[in-house]
Image (cartoon, rainbow over all chains, first blue to last red; front, side, top):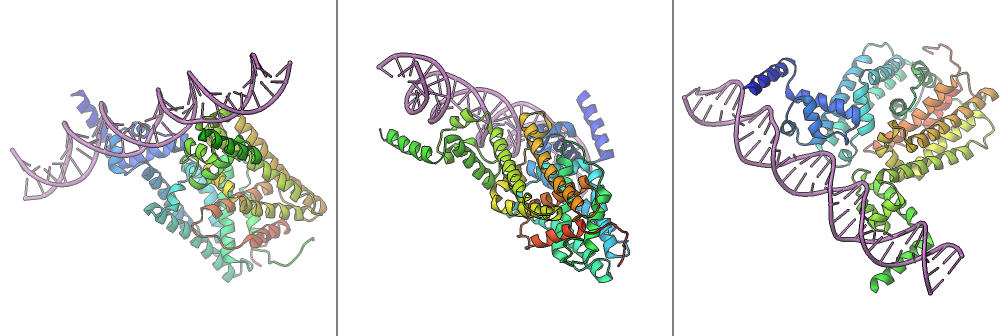
Length: 215
Length: 215
DNA sequence: GTCTTGATTGAGTGCTCACTCAGGTTTACA
DNA sequence: TGTAAACCTGAGTGAGCACTCAATCAAGAC
């Protein structure tokens, strides 16, 4: 009897706020960030989400699929954000800088999810031909294209000097990826250097390649 | 009887080439690269190394310590290499470029070990106060210092324009870290772009920061 | 009211695997 | 040759954990 009342209470709580599936994902994300994917038992996720362990496996095929969903959602949020960030600027260079800034702010705002990605990126799911691998590749490709777009725009409006578009897009992504990694790995907090990072890129993008060894 | 002969044979093989400990580390490194740390059972490592499973735990406290040793050895090799790479160049800018090149060549040459590092970097050992964490921090710090050294030299001999040394060192390491990651993650091989990457950095390091928005 | 469909539960199961340990072998050295 | 120390063995163990399943519950269709 009491259990039933309690269950009803919980049920309304959930109905009002979010459904079980969402609750499970949120709990998983939080725990993965705290302890890492491998060190988080599904029983613990269930406990924090306020559901039975079996419920997890009703909504998700296996534990990997939880990580899958978390990672994909994060990528989607990133892509949406970067798209709006680069829509307004009036030239290509500015768009690139807005994209860089967006990344730098994004990893602060979503720091715990980003930590999951940095620490527990699901490599094993990448090599095999799987829905996950396909979904993820699409999104990685999309991000690359968005950078390429900015750079091409910059070439056309003259705000960016002649460079290899493809290579430069990869370089910019490398810089951001690596910065993110160092930031989350570093035992001591990195100094504030985001402006400096943007300037570093701007100098490179706005200088034409003439062989000036020593000034 | 036959077993004894066989054992003797194996033993001589090992004595001639390398000791057991080394054999175990080599086997572990190879398997971690092939399948990942978590997906490699110690029994498998023992088999490939041609020793009993117990022998692993005679030489190493636990499985983590294997990864520990592999990672630390890799860092040491990297540090030694970069030290010699930056010793000869005649100015700071050149030293930076040599350091960048060294990294790019190093990750090709030691690709399977680097893959282990990229994929299975042992986060959990970082946060706790452990010998591993201390050893690793020392080495990360050392690498940072080497970059700082090059940049300072460049500032003094005038080959590098005024920039924040600390920030720039982190930016360069970020770029390399991220490039390494993308290279090993990318489902399709990256285009050849190492020269372009070096030029990207050179342009940034040799351009003084004046506000030239559009040329 | 009853049938169907889908959600939920949580105790139970089976598997994997890191690590142990008791007993054997080899080496170093007196 | 004796002895201690170090090295090596591999079957065994126990813990952890992802996942299952049979039973219960809820809600909408008719």
